[in-house]
Amino acid sequence: MKKLIVAFIESEWYSMNIEDSDDFIKTLNYSSSNFYITFQTSDLIREFKSRRIKKLPKIIDLESFDKQMSQEGKEFRDNGVWKALGFLRYHKAIDSEFKLSIENIKSFLEKIAFLYDRLLKKEEEEKIRFENIEIEINKLIFERQSLGVRINLDIAKQRCVEIERKIYSLKNDLQLKYNIFTTDNIESQRYYLEKNNYRIIKSYRYTFEVHKKDDKICGLFYELIRNEQDLDSLLYIVSHWGGKERTFPSFHGFGTITSRIILRQPSLQNLRKTNRDIIIPDRGMKFLYVDYSQFEAGILASLSKDSKLIELYNSDIYEDLAEKVLKNRALRKDAKIIFYRYMYGDDSLTKEVKSYFQNFKELEKFKNKVEKELKEKNKIGTKFGNYRHASNEDNIWALSHVVQSTASYVYKIALLKVKKEVIAAEFLMPMHDGTVYQINELEYEGAKAEIERIYKDAFKKICPQIEPKLNSSELFE
Image 1: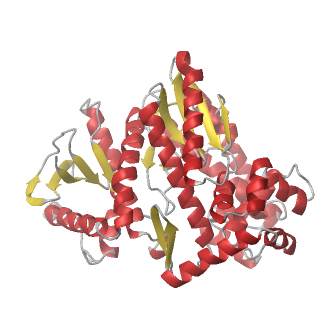
Image 2 (image 1 turned 90 degrees about the vertical axis):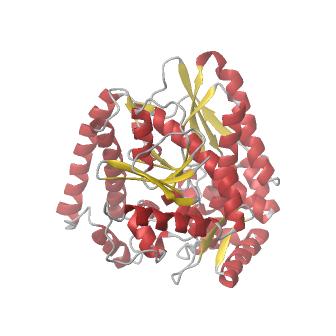
Image 3 (image 1 turned 180 degrees about the vertical axis):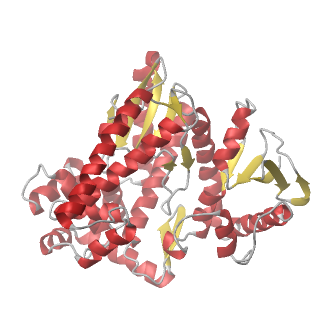
């Protein structure tokens, strides 16, 4: 077995043995026992697919690896966009004048090999997690990337037309009614939020969603961003390779600092529910969409050991919040947003909301403990690794990081156990708190029961204070 750093430049693949830099060749040899370390994961998978290689080797995506091992949020990097040269410059392996070329490709691969080894040895907990969890997750998601996802191209084309009309209408409203002319410009969006003293929570899109009911312009911006994201995904599907029936999303196993699995190009997991019907199962298969109920809320209840919160999980935390604060139990979705704002440290919450959470004494103690630990240690994580370092900015995310990192660990444990034990089920794509599987129609009911058991067991093992609840459906949309 070899660990090879591989890169594609000027129409050629180059490979270098990470443990012996003299083992450097201008080609890409395949062996199912090798590890392939690359920043060009999608290109590498396509290369193996073009050679009709059915069994993918183990592939390590450098971007995901860097996010896990560096343990730094995007605020540490210039613009949050990961690139190989930026990775090397950030870690002081090259200077700003370095330009990649055929002449220095070996030196380039040597520098990546050096950084890979250095980061792997940085934190023992992260190394254990990487070797036991993340490598296997990479194998699972890259196999699906190679196989692709079946889609209805006719519906996708129809939706492109409909969404383009909707975007045109939204831009017209923003421009003609509110004199906001550069609607796609991030600076314009940020200016509007800051002008109205809206604290940016997680992202601009999420912040617009938080305020969309009370601010018409926020609602328009939110709808514009959501529709533009869907249009980008649909245009990618109808215009890129894959034939008439399939699209091949790029997967990132450690796509965020909390280790969520992210799909890019196209971002199928972020499609609005009304557009998910473009995704269809392979012939002879049926969808199973299995989703954790109150996932983060249940994790927070168990970690904090707050008996009142645990008791509410057994009924519905979000409905209780909706009833007590919003005076309408039907406003569950709005209450869920409030819960996430609390978890993310949003201090602009109303007095009524703050008063509601102060009733959970153990939860408040746990929140204070987590925030204190971040200040003292300058990083926060879980007992399963997945730390995040503090920056010089306002580090309000401490509680959210602990909860979401735990959630991603539970989720990945469930994915791997299903992969090992439920042969009839094919992993298709991750959602936020759940998964879309496709299952042979003849084995559907038995496979469904096994998957539900595995998901509950994975949750219960990490969060023993609660009795996990699931939602499952044949309808993905």
